[in-house]
Image (cartoon, rainbow, N blue to C red; front, side):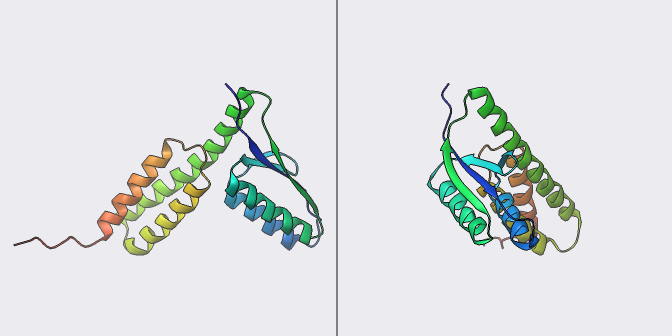
Length: 158
């Protein structure tokens, strides 16, 4: 088995002020990067992920840090599978949280606001889900059930 190409961001951000460092960390978290080491993150390479990491690299440079984007292949398929499994496990936890919230909302009151929020959250998670775990389908079903319970029943045709 051959390994796929990954986009890597190697970066260093000054400790102070902390605001840019926190903003960069949050941006990386939103992308769902795999933490490969201190100051080294990666994503499966495609045009979108390369561009996103390049934007973050620009933010790092603007904050007075250093950054570079690299394209690389893991040395072994085993290493790549382990990396993919770690990323899938992180998304699985996020999907499980959405499922739990959707199921809890089915028994609670204000389903409309919760269903809209969970649909948006599900969309955000899906955008950073490169290796979909089984929990993804459960979360989709739970949110769909919540949305269906929220929407008024269609009037019957005469």
